[in-house]
Image (cartoon, rainbow, N blue to C red; front, top):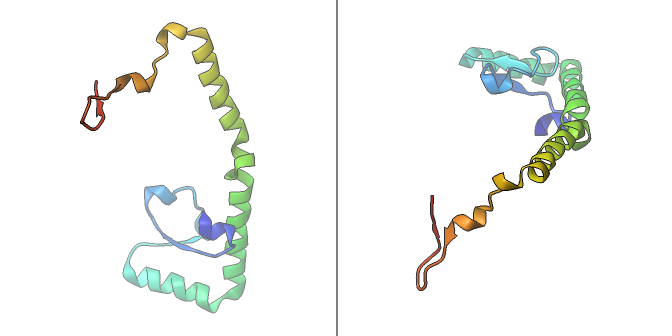
Length: 111
């Protein structure tokens, strides 16, 4: 995503972490060494392709992966945690209670 924010066209390996990146739209993909070479050469030789892929990737990141775009998810998380904390005080657990400090020793974590 960092490269996409700079509108830099990217070649990605066809692996699960990159399944959301749309081949030929927001990136190029490759597996075998000769395929990597071919895809990289395409980007080097074709400035229109390079620009189109870089700008498309940037647009996707700005539309769906910024803090503002993710705001509804964060708001839902904060609401859910707050509701649980306020409605179930008997289930609260302070993680600091698990730390036992003995004299002349480093803190230990129990549990």
